[in-house]
Length: 454
Image (cartoon, rainbow, N blue to C red; front, side, top):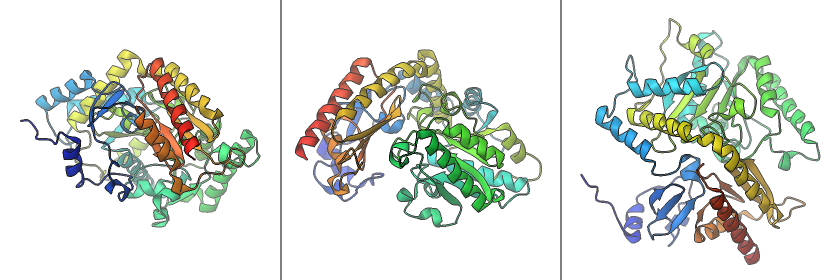
């Protein structure tokens, strides 16, 4: 069967008026030229409906780690659909691809994280982690341990609990709905350091966490959740040693640590998982999605320690959680093929070198007058624009400074993601040094042009 899809830009956009885009200014999308239709992709590039080839500087959305149109993954999905199109993992059922992918993730994950629950998005993975811990503490006779420590600047998803764990500025106060989520100081030294040394700032962050724990009562707190590097909150890298110290503090207070690796896993920082290998801490749960299948299928994983699983799998209670498509055969096949491709081509190892080149190239933009800070690591970079470098004053939000730069970039052949006064780059992990240089040149030219227009 051949699908009857719209082919011209006008035809696509005529039908697109029925689609509600995510995280968009829906009113602005009513204007002519506001939407871009992507119709093809291969390698590091995508093609729009006008035939323009663009460097995919956002990797789909933090996720197309191995690049587009990889036959190995496409064929694995097709083969799986020919064999077993779907069966659930509810009740006593399983199937070969879900079982094999769970075993592979247990092999790759650090420490005793050997048990895997599948979902279909990072939001669901994070919701699942907290729900599982609530169940875990009930089983231990501590049902009051329900509160969650998150952070200002966090992004953990869009489902009800995940958005509650996201920074209050994003979640519009929803975090107050049930009194479960409590937000800690943002670990952004450049913005929040207030004249302290980085070491002093780290001490202050730990004091803030300790104070919040003692205020709420450790006996009421289930977990701390944090991204190794904050993604949609502005690509914020915490001070050195922060994560390890937070994990130690939580362990002292018998609070579980969830590492949200929805973005940072599967090579983006040069390793399959960043928690232990990059930041030196061992979480109790890792959540991941995006790069798990490189976006070829929707799939997420909540990876649990043996100790947590031992409690929730004991006699006397059902595990009442799951989604119809948890461990979908085609999605699991995509995950297995994606990981096999990464291992064969040594994509994480290569990204340690090319990712550092990407980071260095973009940090070179710091000499431009409106670039306040270029931050991040490897293939995960944020550029913050400021009106004044000394005071760090940002531009009036109505200027849409990030969007202006992103539009210039797209005109020159690069897709970048605007986020208020910040521009985010999270490309595929297979960029060549020449393409990295091109991205740097496009960004410099685009920022310079916007500066002139200002």
